Length: 312
Image 1 (cartoon, one colour):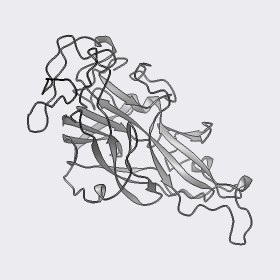
Image 2 (cartoon, rainbow, N blue to C red; image 1 turned 60 degrees about the vertical axis):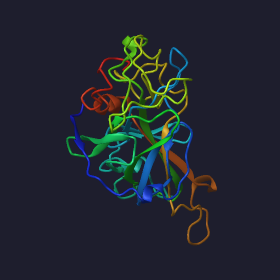
Image 3 (cartoon, rainbow, N blue to C red; image 1 turned 180 degrees about the vertical axis):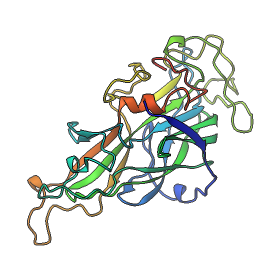
Image 4 (cartoon, rainbow, N blue to C red; image 1 turned 90 degrees about the vertical axis):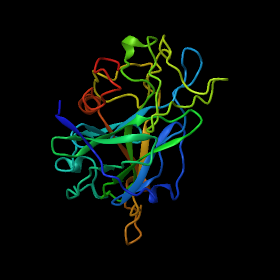
């Protein structure tokens, strides 16, 4: 397991983030990105945590995100076939991307460069989770709450890698996202309380917005329902995970995905001849492995939400 650390961020302007873009269902990535360029982006939180024992939804009170970076990644085709593992931009890049003749391309660096933003979300505190080389592996938002009758954006900046293979039209970057709706919870203490009634960054109790005649959430002695401690927006982890193995929380077919488009993709060469196999471009994907979740979204880095035991 890799050593990891956590650090705070400096405040930055968010004007570019809210200029344009589309929202996705559930928790998605706000905008597409372009290979080789910086994207002022964010995760869209479009609903609260639902399914409590009393049928009431609960506010999202924190979020974490794990990006695919470095050795603990897996690269796949559009059909899910594994292209390679542990490709970090310094070795083995030719197993993933080649030119149209099949020749290996030079190492151009295919890692994401991720930066968090302090501010602009319902959560007062934002932290970067990074490895021993200070590469940002993940982000954590906490100390706040998103009321049930609102949506939210948790912002970040990412510089997408260049795509040297012009027969690859897009790279789908799959990101493991967790929306937290209680603190100190794991599978062992579902349906046990008390529910930790959240407050916003000003110390105000969060509005319910769904239950009649209940202006704010109240502590619930019996907890806030089975499997309602968090929403996990990832599934089918490559390799075993000690921490993230509760099948009731794993989504059946969903990753929060940032699509990186390749502006130089083409199927013909300068002479007009077909340059890509089958006469068509292709897409590939990259995602963190199960070991990456255990290494970076562990108790030390998600303190307050996770107890560090199996099933979180």
